[in-house]
Image (tube, rainbow, N blue to C red):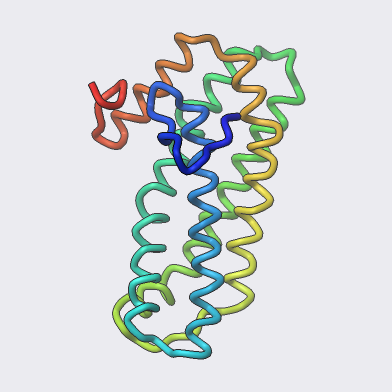
Length: 182
């Protein structure tokens, strides 16, 4: 995968696998913000910084985070199943595992989201350390597997036409043009 430096442009829809990888970095930055928010709430309470952080986390996971899961579940995973065929049992097991992890991550988000909504509205609400840890941990473990196993497999199994089709659907899902900038 491409290692982005601050000077490089982010991948676009014509590089969907690189875009998914870059999204993983954004997810982990949001998880870092969530961790900092939990600490901030204890020491500073629900001030404007806390409200803004909660709003940013909500905005990300309610939109881009959901799009990311849809990209994988509706486009990448089915394309990989088709490309691999029935004989690639390890890939099918990996995809089944990742899908079940998506369910766990969605449940963790659903449990955490009500407190974030209250904080975003200015209600001094603590974030559960257990829920926060479960949410961050589920994403952290999942991203490691996708970056290490899934994305390299996708890069080797999907042909340029399949990859372009995935990128087009990702752009359509977001109401963006494909390729980006056209």
